[in-house]
Length: 489
Image 1 (cartoon, helix red, strand yellow):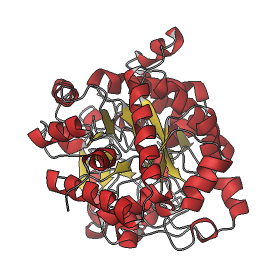
Image 2 (cartoon, helix red, strand yellow):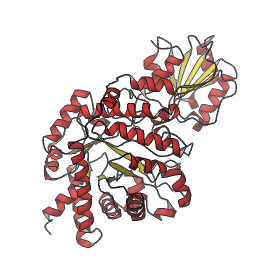
Image 3 (cartoon, helix red, strand yellow):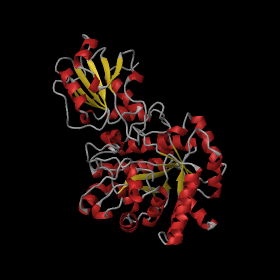
Image 4 (cartoon, helix red, strand yellow):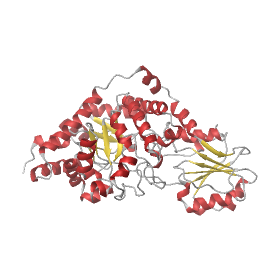
């Protein structure tokens, strides 16, 4: 059966594709000319600033108002600076400082970087309230664990980012902060009554809407009281009844990547997931990172089939394509930036200033001259990717080693340090039994300071001279820690 070209164009108008490499393949531009909403860029698409400008210009040559999206959160999630680490601290550090004007300025600076690169949709900020200390996917991406704190910084971030003409996307609705499962890997469940959801998780989204967020991203999480057995991405009660009707959101509803297990496992395939998300009320569908021409064609064909067999109303598809087009139109004719925001956006060192302000020191940093710096090897979430972190790039000749906690003994490190103190650098150290044991054993016999660059917990090693918290592991956070220790080159 021949595909209705009008339906195919509508279907393409709801899709964010992606491609591999630092230049766009011919099909990427051809699909934009056919009506594809746009593309998402990942770290694999980025080598340097000039290359990104050329890449986005080539995409826009196919259609000037194409959406070109990226996950640029600052902190631990960066694509533009994935080779070095971000020059901006992430949300946890900004929340720790708790200066909304600073948050507004940092996001204006991020927006200015994106606008200069030709990117018009930032899949940020994360506005989840991180109430689960062991949350494996949000953590330092969150402004904090208190709804009011997260809400005021969500608003400031959106205002700063959108002052540059880059659309914001507040995520992950209705709130991913209470999970201990990564939705990239499985479907998390937040089993709380609606009263708790309204008091704890939803206030930042209300603040984002009030601040004029152009888009909101769905979470692949199950909230039985709201979504039943389905993830929020496929829940009409969550997207239409709650977000559209009750909260009055008129912008574009964007899905998290449909290739993620939290969505894929529930739907049985990316094409079926696309139909379910659109039927629930989503407008712009992130297919994922592993995308080619064939996959886009398959997803578009499944959407068309969904209209034909009654799974998806044509009117709903038309509405989704219209809202996505309105988002693109806003970025094509953005509001004029205020002189105040322009000044903030062009303060190149603002991220480093913010990171310094976020550093918290418990104990004393005295008598830590010429230490041995021991960095504990750490994994990373799929959202973060493999991005450099730590103090090594900033050190003034101080010896630094990276070790696996489970494979290293306190005796061996103490012998290597000799009379020198030891500074242990880690991320989410409290989550690793071997890391806790190693640090405790060192602190019992040696002068030790600990630098925590992940989400901080209540755990503190007995006997440690100092415990320094950065609230993130970006390049800016690492420099701020090295400065606090007097180790900067």
